[in-house]
Every structure is written in C-alpha cells, then in structure tokens.
Image 1 (spheres, rainbow, N blue to C red):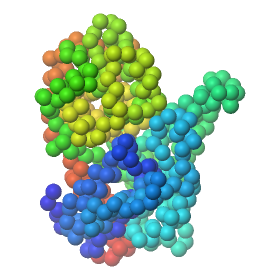
Image 2 (tube, helix red, strand yellow):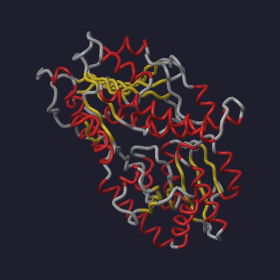
Image 3 (cartoon, rainbow, N blue to C red):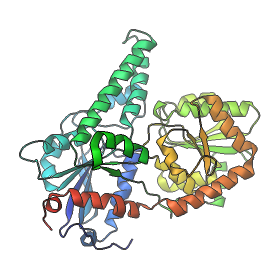
Length: 436
C-alpha cells in the first residue's frame, strides 16, 4: 500500500492495542485480526501514517517481537490465567481473569492511546488507569467490540454448569443451570458496558451494533470493519485434489466449518444437520478445520462422513476453503466472522443462521448463500440438502460470492487507513488538545 500523508498528527501517535488472549498458532479470529493489522502497519511508512503501534498479547513467556521499527508485538504473562475454566468447558481461548495487570500498568505511560479489545486483565487495567486523577486527559481510551462476550458467556457458563452438575458439584436441574448461565451473562454485560462507557471512542463491526451501542454511548460509536487478504483467499480449481488425500470423496458436496469446535459455535447443530442430510440419501460430507471439545462427538456422530483436519495454518487454510463446495457457520457469538469473508473470497456459498451478525457480509439471502431461519438440525439439513441437490446453482452462488468479495470486501490496509487511523489520531491527547 502507498501511504498517504496523515492529516491528523505531525508526530507519531503511540498506540497500545490490548488483546486479552493468549497468542498461539491456533488462536482464533480475534488474535489473527490484530496480527493482520500489525503486519499491514509494519509495511507502511511510519512517518506518512504518523503511527507507532504496540500490540499486547498474553502468553507463557514475556517477550517482544519486532515487526518494524514502529510496530511490535509484546507478550505478557497472565496474573490469574483462565486455565481451570478453560479445562472445564473445552477449547475456549485462554485469558486473564485478574482485574489488574501490574506489568502492563508500568508500560502504558509509553503510549498516547490505549485501545481495549476485550474486558479482562489488560483492558480492565487501561480503563482503571484512565479513570485515575493523574492519568485523566493524558491518554486516549478507545475500545473495539470483537466478540459478543455476553452470548459467549451464556454458552460456556451453561456448559460448565451442566458438567459440574453431572459431576455432583452443583445441585439442581435445568432451572439451576439456566440461572447460573443467566447470572454470568448479566455480569459480563454489565462489565462490558461499564468499560465501554469509560472510553472516548468505541468501535463495532456492524450497523446493527452501531444502533445498539449508540443507544448506550451516544455518538462516540463508529464502525471497524475486517479485511480480507485477496492475494491469499481466492478460488483455486486445483485445490480439491488436495482434500481427496484427506479422505473427502469425489461426488460429495464438501461442507466446510472453520473455527473452534465447541458449543460457542453451535457446531453440533451443523453436524446433526449433515447427518440428517446424509440419511436422506444426499451425499454431503463435513470438513472441519479447527479443534475443540466437540471434535470427538462429531467423529462419533458422522463416522466416515466427516474429515477432521485439526488446526490449519492460514496459507494452507486458503486451499481448504477453495477445495470445498459450501461454507457453513452456525455461530451467533461473532460480531464480524472473518471466516465468512474468507470463504466468499475463495468462491464458496455460505450458509449462516438468520439474525447472526455474520450475515452482514451477504448482500441478500439467496445471492451468495442461504440463511437458516431456525436453530434446528432439520433446518440446517434442508439448506445443505438443497445445495447438494442443485450443484449448478450452488456453484453460481459461489461465483457471485467471489465477485462480491472482490468488489466490496476491503483489504486490511484499507480498513486500517479508513477505520482505525482516524480514530487513533483523534483520540491522542496531542491532537484532541490542539497540539497540531
């Protein structure tokens, strides 16, 4: 990308992005999103964009990875890691439940803008410091909403309560389980809203969220899109041969799921839909790229009707997309769901739950994919069966999906320049106080 002169600042705005998740090769879309923004920023002329960027992650070892003189990753150890909870519910990304992270607190004064991306230790520390008298007005505080944390909490709290009941640690039936999940969800919503109210600017992913959060925060809300690497994710007619080596049979409609394989993504709903489609005589084969607590259950349910690829690196994942026929993603917890955009760019029609925020990628139902109206296996089976029954229509939807992706889905460089840089520069004290 050729960087344009920055109209917002004469000196570099020093930004700290706080990602309350452990960074690993198998991390989810939240981590990958900030990796991509940082990689793109590293390719830009630092003076032209007036930016110095540090992205903080959690990890087992502290360290710094320099991407460019003006861009770096910093890893901090958790104070109170979520390991016990993670082991209870499965493959949820690890975070830090501590309300305050002393090591980060010592580093934050280096930065002009603190950008919270979650509500746990790193983000909570920034919000806490921003409210102190000595820090007030010296730093800009920005937040972006990447995951529907209350919905995620509801899924995991309910699962955890049911497992504790099964082990005899919690007494009571379904009503007690629902109460626990509801209480945890309400707590997370309160905690999220309290953090967002402390921010100078909040960024959300869809126009639906824009209206929702403006009711809470007024005009301090703007959109933060997600990018697509169009040089990596694109149709590839030769990619199917690679999937054959993984056991995907010829003559079957290969339905792909990408993501964490657990209750938060409702992947068992999709697996049961595939089972019903197969039992009705339609050759549908599920391909799963990802790991999680439900992997074994899917294998037991579908047997030879599923190919489990495990964790797949991004470059290899592009060919997995291109080698399949349909992308199906039943999750409601994403605010954007970049996997949907990646699948479309690779020429796959997408099947999504009606009402999910991921549907914002689609121009309309029936153009580049299908929306499933009810969260029931039978409804998912009907959608998959229809696409398997009419392969030419399925392929035409995929071609339209690729065309829409090329024409309408921005690259990461454009999202950074259009959405993030203006917010960061405007939030910096040397700009907002008239320092230009």
